[in-house]
Each structure stands twice: as structure tokens, then as C-alpha cells.
Length: 92
Image 1 (cartoon, one colour):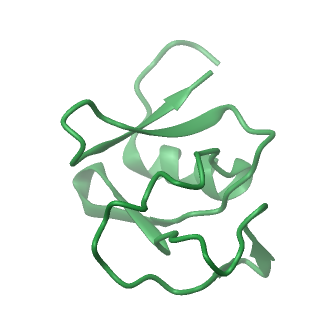
Image 2 (cartoon, helix red, strand yellow; image 1 turned 120 degrees about the vertical axis):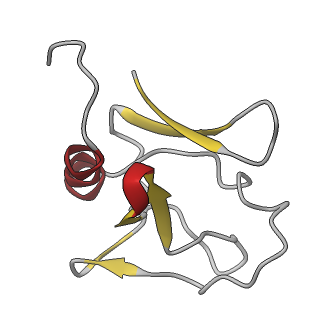
Image 3 (spheres, helix red, strand yellow; image 1 turned 90 degrees about the vertical axis):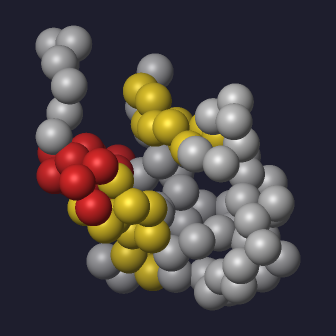
């Protein structure tokens, strides 16, 4: 893929089809209740246990909402920004 900026809709399509990788402790500091686990198109995230705190969705730019499907073998990674209040999706 060429080095171009994806639209939020294109990014959502990639995240739903390929999943996103992130550390299982990434959301521990967020003081909100989360569902125990979620199914996205009849699939569940990999490696998620009952004690992990994982939100159901991400809000992408332009207020596009995308479900989170955790996969280890994906080019997409979710990281916390240095200011600790925002997250960034990067590709390898």
C-alpha cells in the first residue's frame, strides 16, 4: 500500500477485517465500566480474559465508530500517546 492517509472509513474497514494489536493492559487506567468481551461479526478478540478491561469500540476521526477486534497477526497497533489521554493507531 502506498504511504497515503486513510480516510476514517478506510481505517475502520482495515480494523474490522484485520483487527488491531495492543497490550492487554492498555486500558487499565481508564475509570469506566467495560463489557467482559465482545463479538464482532461473530468473532471475538484473541487473548481476552474476563479480567481484561477492553472497550467495545474506538471513535476514529470524523466521529466514525469502529468495534475493536484484537488480533496478534495484524499490521495495525494501538498505542497510548505520550499525554496518556489519547490513543494512536499505527501500521507496521
